[in-house]
Image (tube, rainbow, N blue to C red; front, side, top):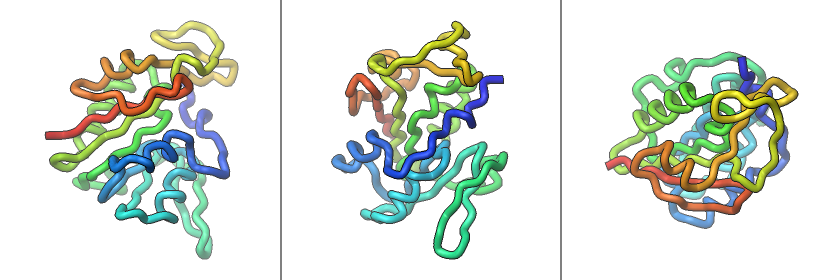
Length: 182
């Protein structure tokens, strides 16, 4: 097992990719933070509500409310339990594909593309080649000391994972591509 739940980091601020993406017009309508980990990007989207309606899902964490506060607690969840037959205008997949081996990565990509509304946009961000990881080689990445799978992607490598995608951001530390459903 490669423990993707161990890769969810605790942050007090939204991710750098989200901050950069908010400078574009890509995030619109019903927005799903897919694999949102401990929920900081979702909470930020919920706070700003810039012409969007944010939603959250992660297979290893569940949002719960305590008073006015949201907490994200470890809990195994299934997508269909929350969003059966729901489609989204925008799906954000931030730092998810880089923690999954190839077969699971393909399943996530296929699932994300299937939950887009017509003309919807999926935005995939992964760790880039300037980031550093070490570990024992496994499939197309490594298993780290924590027992997690990690993979770094160049922009072109990520683009080949998602058919008909376009490069949006390439900082070297992270890479983002978008796919628009037609």
